[in-house]
Amino acid sequence: MKLLRLRCERRFAMARNEPAHGAGGFTGLILCGSWIISLLMLAAVMSGLTMPALAAADPIGNASFSSMTCPSGGITNATCYEVVISDCAGTPDNFVAVIKVNDPPSGETDQGTIFFTTSGGGNGFYDVAFPQDSQCPQDQCGYMVVQDLNSAGYRTVQIDFTDPDDSKAEPAGWITGPGTYGHRSLACRYATLVHEVWVELLGSSAQHPVCATGNSAGGSLIGYAITQYGMGNPGGPGPMFTMVEPTSGPPMGRIDHGCMGSAAPRPVVSCPANTRISENYGLGLAKDYLDPAFSSDVCTVDIESDGADADPDFHYDSVLSTDYPSPSYLTFVKILYGSKDLTQAVPLGLEWYDAILSSKAEACIAGAAHELPGNYDGANQIVSDLTSSCQLAVGRR
Image 1 (cartoon, rainbow, N blue to C red):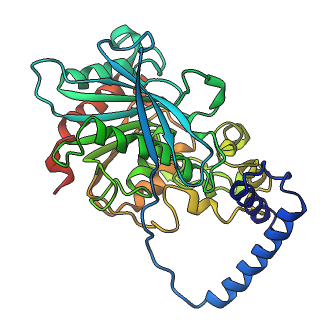
Image 2 (image 1 turned 90 degrees about the vertical axis):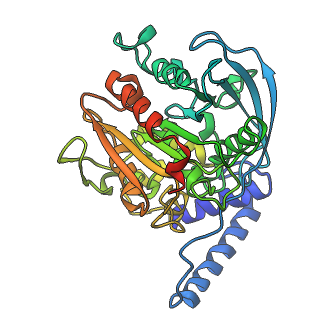
C-alpha cells in the first residue's frame, strides 16, 4: 500500500505539473486516498471478470531534426543531427538526442537500415562506447560492428541520448524521468526517433529492411518498441522492424522482479550454462538506472522491503507487461548473452524472451561479459546475424 500511494502521488504530481513525491501537499494526499479507495472498490467489483489480454499500442510523439557537426571519434563520413523529441505522453518536456548516420558507401547496394543503442541511459555512440579490445580495429569492437555493417551496404544510425548543448540536462540519458509508467513511457523517445528517421530519411518505405541492436538497457528500448509501441507488427506506426538483436538483456524484462530485493527469483539460465542468477537489481543499479525513471525512489524502497511492499505497477511498466503477457511478432528476435555475464540482465531478459511465441533464436558467446559488443567474438556474431537476417523476407514470413 505504501508504494501504491507513492506511485499515485507521482502520477497526480505529473498531471498537475507539480514536483515529485512529497511536494503535492494535502491536495495530492486527498486525491490519492480517494483514488486508492476507488481502485479497491473497483477491484472487488471486477474480481470475477476477465480482462482483455492485449492493449492498443502506446502512442509515439513527434520529433524534429537539425543538422550539426559530428563529434570526433568513431567512423568517418557521417552526417549528424540534433533531434528534439516532443509530445511523448507521460514524460517531461522536450528531450534532445543526437543521431549519427552513415549511408551505404558509394557503389554498394542499399541493404537496409540498422539502429544502434548503447548500455544504460544510452549516453554515447555505439562506435566508441565499449571497452577496448586489441583484436578489433582502433581497439573498439563497437566501431568494428558499425563499420562492417556499413561496408556491407547498411545505413547505420547510432543514437546518443545526450543533449549536445546541455549534457547535465539528461543525466540518466533516455531513462531521465519521471515517466508516468517509468521506462515504458520514457521508451517513447526511442520509438518516436526511429519512426521519424523512417519517415524523413527512408520515405516511410515498407519495402526497406529496418533492424536494430542494443546492449543491456539499450536492448530494453528495442523490446518496448516492438511490443508496447507496435513496431513488431504491421499495425504499429512504422517502421515494422525486420529483425532485432538485443544483447545482454533486456534488463527491464520484469521490473517487478528486479525490484524485489532478496526475494527476487533466482532461475537457472542457459548462458552461462546451468547457472543460477538472481534477478535482483541491487541498490546501486536501482539508484542509477531504475529510480531516475520515476518521481521517487520506488525501486529502492521496494528492494529495501525485499518485496514485502511491492509496487503493483512495475509489471505493467516492464517489457513483458501485463497487457502483453505472451508477445508475438512478425519481427524476428535474436538475443545474445556472454558466458561471463552473471548480471541480473540475463534472467530478466530471458523472462521476456521465453514468453515470445513467434520466431526467435538465442546464442551464448564464450568469454564475453555484460558489455558484449566490446568482445571480439561477440562483435563478429552481431555483424554475422544482422547481415544474414536483416533482409525483408525475414520479417514477412
